[in-house]
Image (tube, rainbow, N blue to C red; front, side):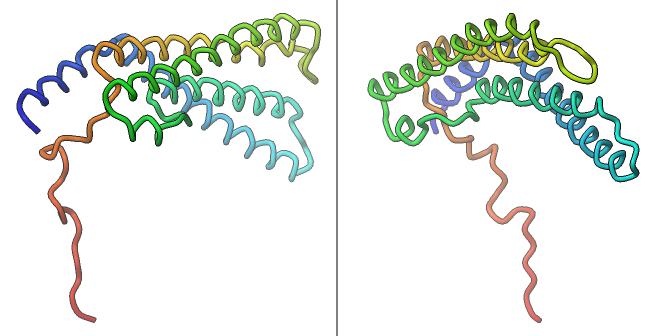
Length: 192
């Protein structure tokens, strides 16, 4: 890789929106806390039911943590390009065809984000008519995760579109000097 290519990669890295890096980090930590809380609440639910003194409210906590982890995780996956999309097709292309396919993929993701926002908000408003038991809280507290996720997905998709149109959508391999040397850290044992 030439020096010019390295400078372009460094420039592309610096063009990312730094505030979104912080938002992504916060969302990742929140996902970790939600997943840990979900696991802990399931464990407590199992233990309390096994000993014959179930805490019924744990079911509500578990479902809330699970739903928020899923929808916030979907937004983070969008930012990291870890979501399922047509990578095989786009990575096989170069130049203008790749640009077109990458833009189309992100427009589809943006359409999904707008559906999450619109229909999620409708469900959120309707959720004030149904209540969760035993707490009696409106089910809208669960549905709030849907439009929130849609807003985050739309935000991250627009960022990808802007950066991709400006700098291209190619995802270069890591630089060779960033990779450990072949066989580093691998110990082989010879003999019996």
